[in-house]
Image (spheres, rainbow, N blue to C red):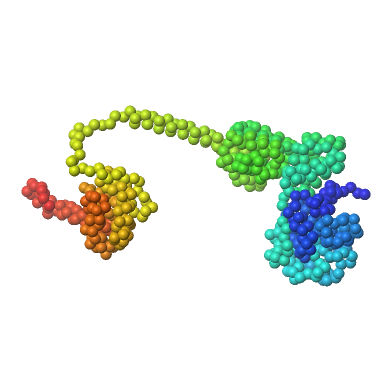
Length: 555
């Protein structure tokens, strides 16, 4: 028998053997057990994640001679024919080469015929997004209402290219990328079956290169095993066989950037170029490396977001612990910004060197943090000296100190901070100076007293605030107060004074002013002053002053 590559030799034959897609296989198994399998299914996901494999297992499960079961026997004639790919009732169609409307019309004409030996006639169309628009339109009616003996299974890597009319007629299942740990464990299991001994770090490296595709991982492993001359394969042999560099060089680059060592950066790039590595691919790996640095710095070394081994997570965590996340993020941002220059440059090596040397000009977050710490220490020292100076400062004695008048009263408490949420302002600055003004609590209680007897007055006074004071007067400033409101307040002024006397025990005068009237008064004063100044500067007045050698003493 001809040699089979690992991807075909160890292709899963049951749902339980599928790696990393339990959310899909469990759903399909339950649907088969409950006889709730849809007549049209769509499997979508990255390459090499098991779309076509699951489609074949589903075809076996539905057509197995031992009855529809989530676990096909894989021994009956139908199962064996499907595994070998020549079952007369299971059609695997390549959507890329069978994408015309005429071929879909032929398919539509053939679906009416009953299966020859199996229970269902199943059409598996791979890369279905490659069908033309006319082909999709020709398939719509048949896809929506197929015969009872027909099933359609579609597989695609680009689901966004499929028309919405097709998507709405299919039961969709999304397959995700397979984690590094699952791929590495699967490769270890296959190596043991094949009788090879491969180091764990080598399998991890292959898994990282596969980028979540188990088929790509198997292809790389097949290449490694084929090039081996012994059953024990060293890590260096795998690096040479795959034509890739160890990820240690990526750590060397990040370390040189952190240490501001430009010479070391140029040496590493020269080494990579001499090894015949694709520099553009290496630059892409460098971006992913700094992405992992950024993820570990932000999320921690236990985060599953970074698809790398635990040992590498620990190594990265130690490397970035001395730097801020902003610094790492800035490095990654520069690498992404300059990617187009590297991609389209005819001098790729020089372009990469230029980008890496540019990274050396970025100040690290650790330096910024040190500056901030030093500023905090300096600020604390200055503050302590100022506090010491204030403590030793002697108060200035007034020459003409006068005792307070006999009628001076200190009955009113000191006023606290004004309550801006209460709807009015009690004039914080004014109340600090004159202790005759009632405190905030007393003023609020006074307003409540007014609310009980004069609700209209309460509504107006609540909108105002104590703006200034002089000689025991409380001036309530009312902005946007109408003339009608002002008249009402003026009419109730005696009653307000009486309530104030009863409640506060002091004779406080309410001088209710309007901001609008006050502004008008100021304008009048300004206009009058301008008119007088113009009169003083009149030529006749000036000439009279010169003639009589006089000056204006009254005006």
